[in-house]
Amino acid sequence: MFAAVSCVLWSATTLLTGVIHNFWCLFVFRFLLGVFESSFNPCAYGIISDYFHPKYRTTANSIFNGAIYLGGALSSLGVIMIGWLGWRGTYIIIGVVGIAFGVLGFFIIEPERGRFDQKKAETISTGPIANVDDRSIITKFYDAFEECIISPTPRYITIAASCRFFAGYAIAYFMPSYFEGVWD
Image 1 (spheres, rainbow, N blue to C red):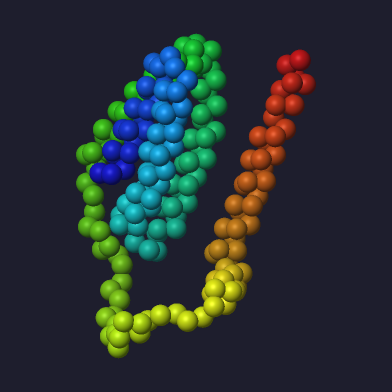
Image 2 (spheres, helix red, strand yellow):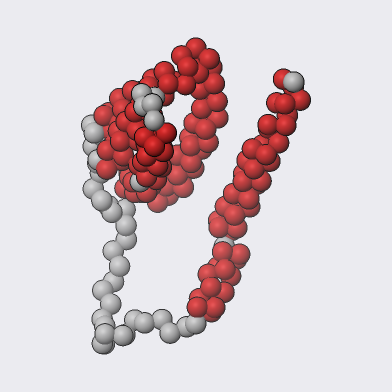
C-alpha cells in the first residue's frame, strides 16, 4: 500500500507542477517529487521479494529494473506531448495518468511478508557484547570488496552499471552539441 501512496503523491506533485505560476512552488513540488519517487523502489523490491520465490526473484528484479530504463526511453515522447499540449498540459496529463495507476495500486493484494525467507536459527548471546565484530574497518572493507570481486553476480552488476552510466553520461554531455549541429 505504501507504494501506491508513493505513486499517487509523486503523480500529484507532477500534476501540481503543471498548474503553478511561482518558482518556489515549482522548487518545492520538484523536491517533493524526488522524495516520493525515492520511496517507491524500496517498496517495489520488497513486494517483488514477497511475490517471487528466490529462484525467480532475479528475473523479476531484472524485468522491474529494465522497465525503469524503458520508461526513461519512453519519456522522450513527452517532447511530442509538449509540442501538442505545452509543458503545463503535459505535466497535468502525466500527473492524472500517474494518479490513476497509483489508485489501481491500492487494489493489489499484498502477499504474506517473508513467506520465502528461510528461518534463521536462534543465536544465544553470552552477554551484551557477545556478537560484536572487533575487526577493523579496513579489514571489513577488504573482506566485502574481495567478496564482490570473487562472486560473479556483483562483478557483472558492477560492469553492467559502469557501462550504463558511461553511456548515459556520454549521451547527456554530447547530445546538446549533436542537436546544435543537426538543428543549427
